[in-house]
Length: 205
Image 1 (tube, one colour):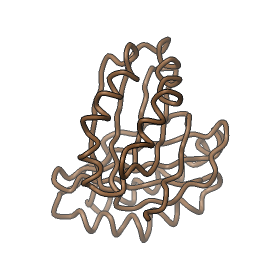
Image 2 (tube, one colour; image 1 turned 180 degrees about the horizontal axis):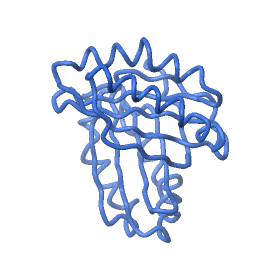
Image 3 (cartoon, one colour; image 1 turned 135 degrees about the horizontal axis):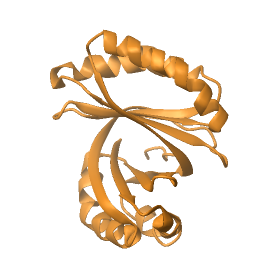
Image 4 (tube, one colour; image 1 turned 60 degrees about the vertical axis):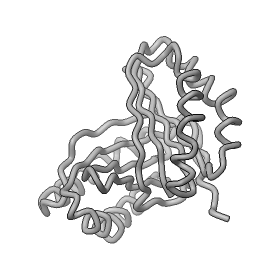
């Protein structure tokens, strides 16, 4: 699987209109794209931040969709977005999310690592980090997305509600510290969002 993320910031007062466009008129054109496998939409209404994740069956379908999605993105995010960053990732690890209800929350952790250590980072996430995340109360699903060439990645985790997200902060901080102590990865930022929608990634045919 491959993932395209769009990270946009703008006037908080205009955010809900962008969300409405994405979840209504923006959805069908995405679903119709060959290789499309799922959508996640996350927001910070207080600061005016919006993050989308679109999942694709393979790198070919990700790249083939680029122009059509670029046009769609410009229409959906105008007039909200004053800044925008678009990135492509390989989904190195992902757990199919449990049903996500109202009040769910999402934490995004951005990391950097030596590109030559990519496989070690992925292996450590699968064998140690992911099982411990899955054991936490309220954890619904998540992923490790990587950019092998640039030595960077994101760890995403969805929690059932705000209480679960808050309760996880301490244990997750411990996980980050242990990972940092190995020298394999450096944490660059941590952000938290409300979940608007998560359409589970569809199985490959």
